[in-house]
Image 1 (cartoon, rainbow, N blue to C red):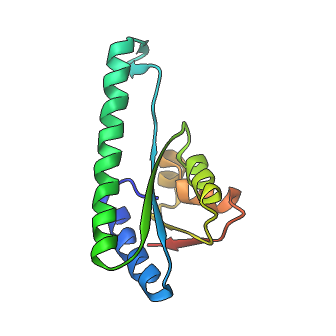
Image 2 (image 1 turned 135 degrees about the vertical axis):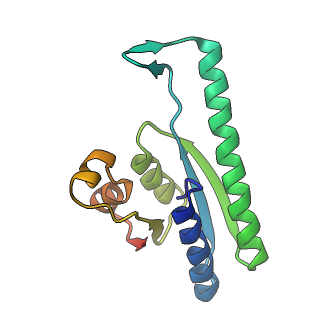
Image 3 (image 1 turned 45 degrees about the vertical axis):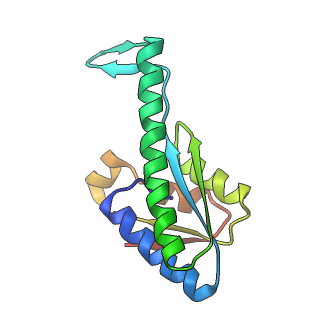
Length: 140
């Protein structure tokens, strides 16, 4: 999985190297969070047109991230696929995608947050580690 952040992109580069060494294929994933309402302050806006535009923008960003990953993998001679899944919870999309493609391992980044920062920000990596039956390789 990747969200296009600098840490995720570093993990993508390492995953490509790992796949090249193992003669493996990669499926890159972007987990999108579409919503039926947009929250502003204490209220919610459920304007259909605004939500369609928001979701289309999310799709566009995900496709750009995935295209960049694909270009890097192809340049390194690594076979790859891309997948964008919509989910309220990114960790669920990560596990679903890994199951769907019958992955041998989930290779993902972790910011390594601890303590209060981890509680506030949450950790998708920790949730994947907790809920996945597929082995997870964490890059930090």
